[in-house]
Image (cartoon, rainbow, N blue to C red; front, side, top):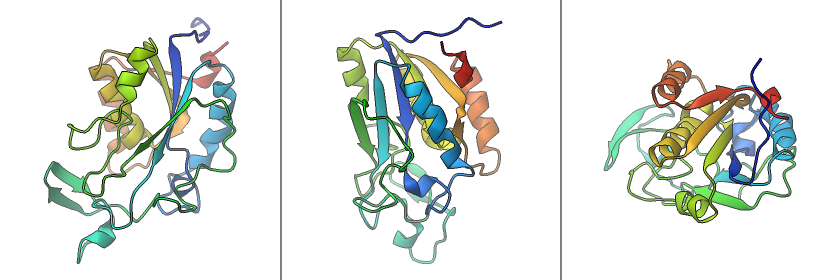
Length: 212
């Protein structure tokens, strides 16, 4: 039987994008996305440190299919930093879709990282935007607070959770993804690709019942 995990002062729970637009009925709904909310609420009670991320796009964002004539959601286009998937308009600043879901109950969260607010750069990762040059500041915050181990939950497993986990490992943090506190979009083999990436990068995978 695996040892029970007791989060300490150098551990942080990173809850990725628990927003209306990623839950059922939202503009970019992740299948059963709202099912993670009671799980992350319980997890957050175990952690001294909890950080949330929030997609926060201006209208007309580069990643929106509506910003590209003749394009549809889930098409891909070439942009200055590489290939970009085009998404339905989602998580537009100050909209209901961008707000945290009403069932999220984490009043003690100490930091909210907003990402994707530069009009011409998409951002999946909590650490760095998709141009791979524009940091969010999260890495510096964690180092100044002397946090070394990151547990990740939220939406979506195969995009923002995956990119956040990869970037955290690249920055030298120990990383664990809490599988039953995540849900994926599932475009092609995107979920299995995320799982392969976690294995290759030594990102741990565990369940929420691993915590004491």
